Image 1: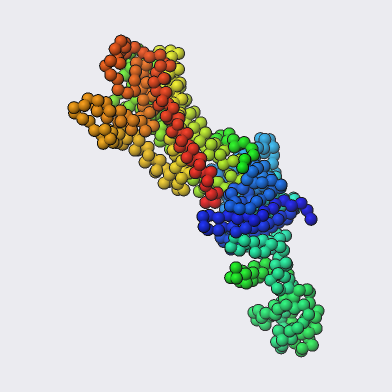
Image 2 (image 1 turned 30 degrees about the horizontal axis):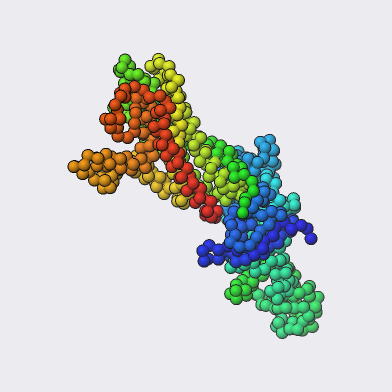
Length: 312
Length: 317
């Protein structure tokens, strides 16, 4: 396993008697893309701010790249980039000037900054708009400018809070490609999002936040297994038989649920298509279609919160 | 727990950016236009008056700043009145503006301390005010030399420069006040109004409030002459809570070498004094030293308040 980049132990934050985050443990390795999921108010943004040292934790410790964000904030912030929820820029300054300002704050020399800004803007495809005031930018362009800032500063870790909120599908796609590119460049990325397909498409692991705690931390497949279902989902279109009774007791099948117009959703721990087809044909069923897909995060997410959120 | 790294990392960058913003903002242009027009009007009036009285006036150069011709007040009085307005215009949205533009969290995620943000904003504002004041001062001096044909003496220049420095400190008090309100209040409009309300109270109403309160605290006893002095001292004490009063006293003494005192003077204290003889510059400065210290202390106090509040503020709006 590669080196640990970020480690949080027993992280908690209370505002008076109100508990925002109630003890979180999180370990992130180099090069990972971690998705932070959870309903609004589950403590994602507060956790992010504590990781960065922008908010003091009531309890617990954080170590990023071997440093304490409260004791060595400058060293941590030099290596860790943060793209806040609905990022703001100075509207009367151009995109290039905005980046130049943060470059100076980051301590880059003038030539170094100029060169890096040009490269970063090129990579997020904002070169043409670079000398227009940010006030004229669309929301997607602002988010891309935020990514350019991370690129320019050449951070080791990037924390993105709701990077895709309020973006149209095309801008979302563009942004995701940029984030993936950052990840391929060796950056460790934490991102919070409500768009589950977004998270599934780019994240190696997910952390499910629920009422100030991390309810689950692992891959989407692990989540599906943890919920007592298989990580393989097969959509079966069949006529003439009652599928649940035919499949009862079949090896590896964990559940059979009817979905719309004559199809069934079969969940299994492994690829059971061959046995399924065999059983259906033997029972005299009319098998029309069978389609295997991986567990979907939105299904797992919804199920998780149905089963655990109410119990918690 | 000690933090590592200097709290001043990035102060210069923030200050220069703020200064550049102010310099190019329409807000600043408008208010400086107002100041410039009134300043030109005041000098013009002063020069006119001075021409009439040149023969019997010993401190012509300093008179440029203090002489007024109806209906215009003097340049110094103008600054005392308008400078707070300039400072408030520069500072009222310093902190809450960043929150509203949603740039605060991004700014604080840069490798700088919060201290640098607030300190940089204050310095940036003060820098712009100082540049504007120096420009105005040089303009006044230049116009004076041009129209009166009198070069200022070394002592005149010294007094003028010290007065200029005190004027910057006076503006600093109001800038710190405006920044404090911008930290305490989330809406820029409300913080601007709050700062303007304080300005209005101190410039317009304080001179009415002071005697009223003094009368309540120390009523005059018709059979005790000392009670009159007592009341006057109370009134002066209360009046001096206003930076306006302090600045007025400093101006009065620094720009008029003949002035001897800012408080009541008894007849026996004047025994042997040559009325109208100028005081050395250092002596004038010594008399108003408490006022100058008071102005600087007020500036530091207000800034500290803003600093403490800002350090404890949550980043998320």
